[in-house]
Image (cartoon, rainbow, N blue to C red; front, side, top):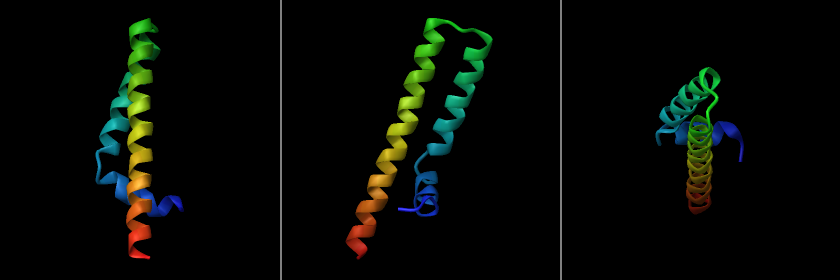
Length: 67
């Protein structure tokens, strides 16, 4: 599946908001490199990756149903 096919679909599912949250957590970590901030960034990054993977699966499933 090409990126152009899944990006618009994912934008409808709060990916942009999660990415902004991850970027904010990264900036906090750059200013204060604590264990808590590192764990927070890891957790948010996992959420972003999980949501993107879920969007790809949903898009793939809907594409297969249309075929």
